[in-house]
Length: 287
Image (cartoon, rainbow, N blue to C red; front, side, top):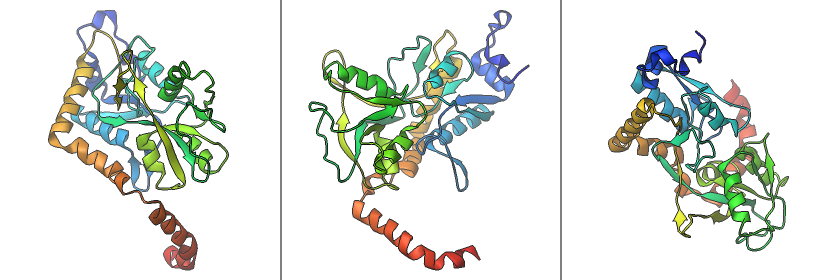
């Protein structure tokens, strides 16, 4: 049987749950994306908050972890919906998914969508006034859905969407002055500011419900929504245990504990010293 063949429930095997099949097959298939806040290859191997969480979840089930990284962001939920993956862990904002067969699990992090610009350019205060430059975002992202909602109030708002570039690449383009603005989640902004301190937040994008109340923006894993709750419920238990034990807080501290320590002058000075002083000692390090 192929790698993903047992993901489909056979009519004659209805007593076997999704959780049973994961354990029988010996692997948990997760669709994710490569970014500093989700999954990446660091100097000591695989890293990222989503990697840490899913690998711990897989170990708790006694199985191996397998990743699928799609070329297009909009394919992430489709892969789960079509049973090509057991779940999606990709820094996904919990929304009313357009896919009817998708549901989100426990909240594990709260974020804010932010408009990002580069230091030296006039700082926009809101979408009330038309942006004096080009805004580009990641296609198929929660940012796209949010902007479409905002456009109902501000019809003059316009933007471009990119299928090729991840949000981190778009922020890099803003830093290189190839782009004026982009939108990113607050955890993504805080992470990349360590490397590009000239990137700044113009303002937060608030999300409102039908009654005009501000809705929190949270991250969660995505699962297929069907009558089989076994794997979904197991993930709920996993996050409950991670929260109670303090391990979830420890992981977030490891990856985001530096956020409140951001200091533009300290970071730019650090980068300047690396550029000016490191070449003098390069040969010593290479010996």
